[in-house]
Image (tube, rainbow, N blue to C red):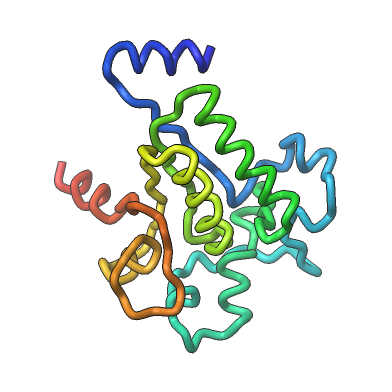
Length: 182
C-alpha cells in the first residue's frame, strides 16, 4: 500500500516525505515487547523524563547530568527512549532508513524530536543517507527558541565544537506564529 502511494506521488510529480522517529517508540512496539538487548533503551534507576531543554546541549558549560537528562530522558512514561549509542541499535536504525529510501523511494525525511537523539548518531545516520542518496532532503524537528539555537542543530558556520550535518530545521516557532494570527 505504501509503495503504491509512493509510486502514485512520483507519477504526479510530487515527493514523499517520511516521518522518522529515532528517539523513542511506544510501550507496545515490537522492540520493547521483545527487547534484543537491555541497553537498546536508556535505563534509569527510576523513571526520568527529558527536561525538554535545548540549552544543556548547546552550552559548553552545562552540567553533564542536565545534558544526559535532555538527551536520554524518556519523552513520556509511554515512550521509552532509544539508546542510539548502542552500536547494534544504531546499525538497525540506519539500515532501516536506507531500506525505506530504496524500497519506497522516500524523497525526504522529517526527523522527529531531533534534539533529543544522540547527535553523533544523527550525524552518522544523515551521512549514510546522503552518501547513498545524495539528493535526499532531511529536516529535523528542533522545537527550540531563537535562530542561534536552531543553527546549533543544523549545518552552520558557528565556531562551536559540535558540527551538525542536518540540512535544515523544522521551525515550530514560525508555525505557531502564523497560526496565532488566524
